[in-house]
Image (cartoon, rainbow, N blue to C red; front, side, top):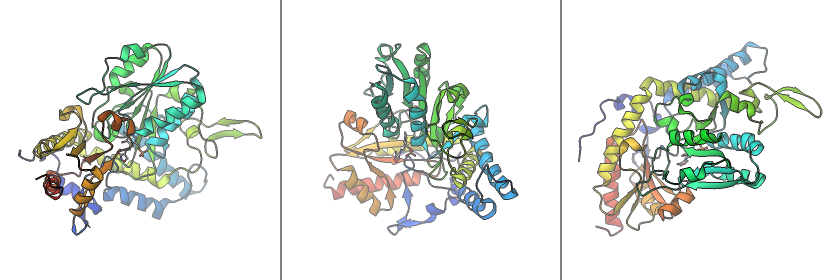
Length: 416
Ligand code: 7TS
């Protein structure tokens, strides 16, 4: 066992900010190890949303009265915070969406549908979340385009050996996860951006796990679009963002029409508001956007370098402690610097759902299942995995609790 290496993040103070982490589950302190599914929320986020409803609730972008202006300022202020957090050049590079899934669908239906035709290709990897697979399958049905995939190698990294063969004039879109929610693998975004440039294809990064877990400078990444959501980065559910290059947004049609997104509407034709409003039809998730702004403020106060350092520390600690458990197989890169804090594993032939149920009785919340990555489960040749995943509020004590519970599970399943 190694010493817990976590002094750099003041966890004793930080955990006090999370009301749910003070609660019990099944009569034991909650050990929440499912941050890849959704993170817990600090009181600063809850308070910002509560204050919005108590002090400033009105619809945005329409009222002439002071309250509506206050609501609009808080909503647009949140956009500014998210834009600064990802180092966007302007707030108009951030479109608020319902989350990562709706951001990717917005690009699929707003860009893909109008720029793809018969025989064109979309390149993905076999580690993608369904959110970065299914929208493209739907677009292929509409356009006659086809999907091609880069595989995963024996070290659980994206295998780039066949890339050159797939990069030709048929290639129009590359979709890549910035960080896998199953393997933790960091996607080879820079290599794929370079490949795309050589044939004028666009790159969309699924940033659902990448943006929350590492310092990001989205314009410098070189991609055309990056999708991410608030709820995996301490913010509320129901809101996310699509970052995009201004010229790509200009090429994109609105996938949804309605109020808020128009300049003028006639009986048969309409014209669009400027980006980002062109892509925000209807009343947006206002309180949620305000909470998103508070979440990125909180992360900035920790410092994203610290967030990443903590993630590397706790992931390396977890990988070492899990290696002590016999019959336990981890699926993912062994180098903590090449990965994030989602750690998938199986224990002998115990079904991951049974394992998660046993751990739940100890107050330990992990996810078991296919993690919305069924193609990857087939590659790994498993029906499901168990997954522990970490964030800023995760501690080595929680890893220790997981490992003890896994030993107990071994005993219960007759492995010891
Ligand atoms: N992409 C990745 C890499 C994800 O991890 C997720 C959610 C999504 C897209 C979709 O995000 P949503 O907020 O729009 O649903 N991942 C998980 C998970 O691993 N367990 O629950 C949700």
